[in-house]
Every structure is written in C-alpha cells, then in structure tokens.
Amino acid sequence: MLQFRLSSVLKELIQTSLKRPLSDIARHKTSLLSSYCFSSVCPDVRATSKLKFMNPGGLRPLSQTSLWKRPLCTKTEGAINQTEPLKKDDIQEAPADKKAGMMPSLEDLLFYTIAEGQEKIPAHKFITALKSTGLRTGDPRLKECMDMLKVTLKSTSDGVMLDRHLFKKCVQSNIVLLTQAFRKKFVIPDFMPFAAHIDKLYEKAKNMSGGQVADYIPQLAKFSPDLWGVALCTVDGQRHTVGDTKVPLCLQSCVKPLKYAIAVHDHGTEYVHRFIGKEPSGLRFNKLFLDEDDKPHNPMVNAGAIVCTSLIKQKVSNAEKFDYVMNFLKAMSGNEYVGFSNATFQSERESGDRNFAIGYYLKEKKCFPEGTDMTSILDFYFQLCSIEVTCESASVMAATLANGGFCPITGERVLSPESVRDTLSLMHSCGMYDFSGQFAFHVGLPAKSGVSGCILLVVPNVMGIVCWSPPLDKLGNSVRGIQFCTDLVSLFNFHNYDNLRHFAKKLDPRREGGDQRQHTFGPMDYESLQQELALKDTLWKKVSPTESNEDTSTTVVYRMDSVGERS
Image (cartoon, rainbow, N blue to C red; front, top):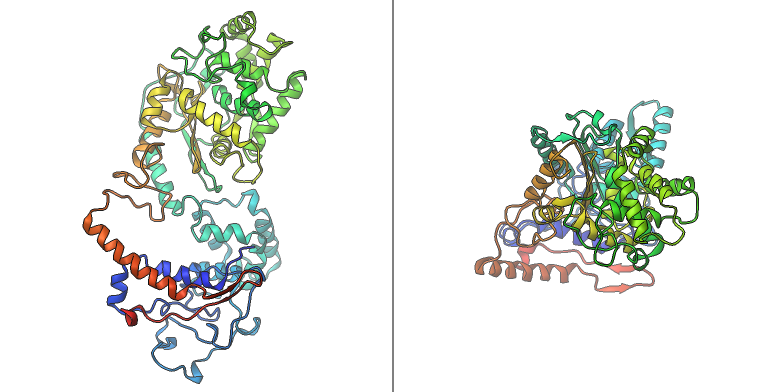
C-alpha cells in the first residue's frame, strides 16, 4: 500500500506547477490550486493523475471545509473564484458510495487518468495505455490483474467496457505497480519516445553489411547472416523488442559471465580467484597461455571459463550441475525461454580440439580444484555453451545484472550483490575479446559477446540489452551489435563516464522529457536560479505541515493563497 499524507498532495501539485518559472506564475497572479479539482464526481479530472494520497490508516476524512466541499473545477460553469465567498449552491456533496470528505482511492485516480472524463473505458484502451508505459500484459507481476480482467470481461454484459467499479476490481491487486507506471516513476519515464529511438538505431545497424558467420562450429554456420534482433528490459521490467528476438540462439561465450556470477554467488570472490585471475590477457580468447602465477588471466577467456566451470557444484554429477545452472538462468530470465541445443553440444564436442588442449594444459599446471575430472568438466563446459535463449529472455538476464541481482519481472533475489559487482567489473575490462579496451573506451559499459553473434550489454541500475546478429568481425564480435552499442552511447548518456550534470548534446531517458543539457550555469543562470529557489522555499513553508504526530499520522495542512498575493 502506498502511504502518503495529505500534505504530499499539495506539495506535488506545487511541484507540477513550478515546472514553469516561478516568476511567470507570480506575473499572472495564478493560484497554484485554481486549476485542480479534487472531486471524483467532477467531469474534468485532468489533475487526478498527478495526485498521490494514501496514509497508513487508509483513506481519512477531511474537515467540513474539506476539498470535497470546495471543488476547484476547470469547467467554466463550475469554476469557483477563490477571492469570492462560497455560495450554498456551490457546495457539492460527495458521491453516494463514498463517505463525505473522503479522497478518491488510487484505483479511482487511475481510472480517471485513463478514462479522460468518460464514465466507462474500453478494455483495449487500458491495455494500450499499459503497454505505453513499457509493461507487458504477460508480466508475472500483473498476473492477478490480467486474470481478473479476463474473468470480468466474460461476466459483464458490456463486453469490453469497464466502469469505475469493474476497473477497480481488476486493478486493485496490482495497484502499486500500476500507479508507479502511470505516474512515470519508472527508470525510463517516457518509454515510447525512448523505444522509438531504439528502433531508429536498430534500422541504422540493419543496413550494415560485412562480417562472416562463425563456421568453426558447424551448427553455428547454419544461421542466416540476415538475422538481427534487439531486446531490452529495464530494472523496472519495462520491455521493448525489435527484429528477430524470438529466434532461439546459443549463448556460447555469453554464458561465461553468468557462470562466473554463479560461482562467486556460491563460493565468494576470494575462493574463486584462488584459481582465476582478474586481468585482461591481451591475447586471443582461446590461447594456451597463463599468467605469471600459472592461473588463467580471467574468467572471460576459454581457459578461465573452463576452470570456472569446475567450481560449480563440485563432487556431484554433470546432470545435477546442469540442472542447477539451468534453474539459475531461468530465475535470472524471469522463467522465460531457456533451452538446450543438443546438436550444438555434439558439434562443439566433436570440433573442440583446442579446448581439449587447453584442458590438458590446465591439468598439467594444476589449475583445477583437487579431484577434478578434466574430461567431465569439458563436457559440462560444452553443455553450458550450448544453452539456448532468445533475445527477449536474455535481456531479462542482463537486466537482473543491471538490477543488482534481483530479477526485474519477478522481484526474486537471484544473485548476491558481490557476485553482480565482480561480474560487471570483469565484463567491462575483459568481456569483448581483443576489442575489450576499445569497447570500454568508446561505449564504457559492461558487455560480453559470443561467437553466435550475441552481445549482452548492461547499463547498471537502468537496463539490460541483448543484440544478436550472426556475422562477426575479425575479432569475433557481432558487426551490427558493435555498431548498435556505439550509436546507443552516442545518443544517450549511458557511458560510465558521461557526466550526468554537464554532458553535452546527449539525451537522458532517465529524466522525464528526455531533455538534454548543453551548457553549464553562467552568472545570469545562477542568479535567476537563486531567485526561484527563494520563492519556492517560501511556498514550502506555507504548505508544509505545521503540526505533525508521527504516531497517529495526523497532519494539519493550511490552504494556500495565490502566489501573486504574496509577491
């Protein structure tokens, strides 16, 4: 339940009004509350989407001078001049189904936001509005809402129309999530414009040619070079896909950071790095080469990944190990598609001479934990490389890493914060084969590529993105994927070292409106800012609670005067 005092309602109304310069408000002598109506029976409910009010005790009645009794309508015939005394005919009673003085519930406010003054709304209008926030109807967090909507539509005579009571019945079980979505409280508040930018970047990369599909693993050579898909999932579960995002693909090397995260989650960083280093190797990913301590350089090259595989569920059978990792990956993907390609596994094993050579070299140098069966570990290694995902399910895995180990669409804690931190650090420094330094410089984000053409990209605390296109460049990275990632950071301020306050000519989708800041404050800007802050401080003092009891959640709020009257 959202728990807000009534004072927060007025504060938010002021914040909304103060998006334009305060000097402009004062110049026109506009009352900050004159354009808002708090009555649920008023046909003009434009302001209700901006309100938030629930307190620990639920809905609380106001006094006889409450806003229910003093509606401030935007309709000409219903408007009340605040400078005139209230007439008896102007007094409007609360609806019959509410107690006098009650404020509308969150469900009611959500209905008014979508209905736009209508008494009923089509179900498809609600679904369309929901999708515009980035949420999907199949989101596990909305299961109760969607199930109730289906039952309600079957039982009502209106078919696809919902009145306020039916709507409330459908959404009440998921009202917190829906309120966050429609009040633009997600990490990407204006999701549709952001998705449109992603589509443009996708189309630009789609026109690129060049690269070769990997053929040293026969099964990979069968994929069409024209396949191209991009999927993203934010830390709030907002989703967008474009292109071939439902085609199953093998993770290949993209599984390396995931199994490293599992190993650190199970054993801790100190234990894992007894066997594996943390440095970029500067060599090809499949070289027979160790560091000066006779350890693999990092878990993102084949030698390190093979050793990392040996650390997962030691002393149990490969079947149990495989189920364990599959369950982990399914949890990371929010139970979306995670499969296995036996054909790719057989192909890997038959053409894996280089990896067998690396395995024997590691065995000679005693790189494995004591008692490890090297040939069994290589079989398990090939199995993990042959795990299948889609761009859509893999994007949720990436978002789980972006979200500190919590799956964004289930809310389940999958990985420890330590394992996520260490995984992202190594992805940033070692994840893109011999292109890792260039990628860190130009893109500045943790990423991992695989020879299937997949790139798993993480924007920490914001989103996970997966790009997939089979044609690879000479370093083994997807040609289209590299172009997309580079263009993404050129357009948005996602680079780790983009200054969030003084970046130049980049969009920030985390800010409402996606505005860009192209200059720092000069003397004139600073002076005007100080003036506005001084006036804003006066407003807060007027509307802030003057009497408050935290135990009883009682708050006294005084009605604001016009700004113009105080200027």
